[in-house]
Image (cartoon, rainbow, N blue to C red):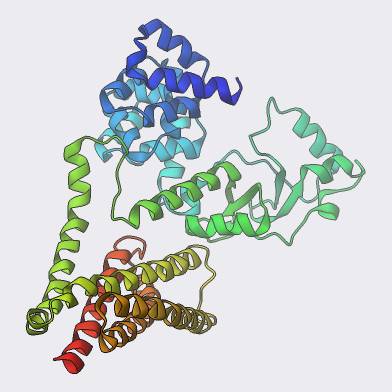
Length: 446
């Protein structure tokens, strides 16, 4: 099905005014892939979402559940029985089953596992023992391994004897008799090599496997830097226990980007979450912002006498604070991106700070001239124009300090700088902006 037809089906399904019968909706769902159905569910309010999910066949539910975000996934899982869930996920890959089950309450997860065959249960328990945000949480056990002394002819015959190769199989792995990782053998090398050659002669040993405890973001970075499609995963003893494929890494990158985007605003919720849940997820950072607003108000209150005597200071001071806040957010965004991509370290942070400082000074000079000229034309007061220009430069410089130091300090204390970082830097620049402008006005105008 082409993209246009898929988009039309999606819009028809989620449009409450289309007045489709259940059979018509079911026929449209049958034409859509699991990812398209998941997108339709994520684009629907809760009541309509539950109806759409109820129309799926049990064997379709597992693939769709895996494609969903965690919050919606768990909401839908809560509406089905343990038996139905076990049946729905049984055909999924190991990492997909683990992703779904590990978010369940422990008691329910145990009941579902107890209803599975011993082989399936042991297979899943291997994945469940590793944290979700590690290489172990992403791995699949569907690896193909060979010995270094095997001939290419033997390897080729073995591969041909498989009913179906695991998805994204671009290489197989070489291990010794103790299952210790030795290297890898690409499918292209197998095809193009002389059948009489042995694996040891053509295997590659330069590619390092991933440790099972590696952070999933580091896994994603390794895949991106080395253009990998798949990679071996080993335990602390160097024994091969599974592999990670590019489709799992794409999910990590997408989830990380989604979290960073929502975190910038202190939000973490489903787009169509019920009002109560949405309010609960936002109230903490709104409360934090309220606290910081009182801090900024306290800074203004220090100069109440100046505001009483020169009323137009109140008209101009938001300009200084606003410019500093925007500049700080720009720097914060650059730093967050650099931290996420692991481009920032102790060797280059000093250079980045100097660069951002130079940018702020240049922008400060340009903008201070514009603001100063506008202020003079407005109020016909040269000293006021000079003071607001100076305050603007001071606040733009302070925005660099806040934009760089705040995320670095939060990261040092193992806090996510994307969540709440903007609240801190905005408060900092507001306070500096108010103090610099009103303080200078108090010294030179009163």
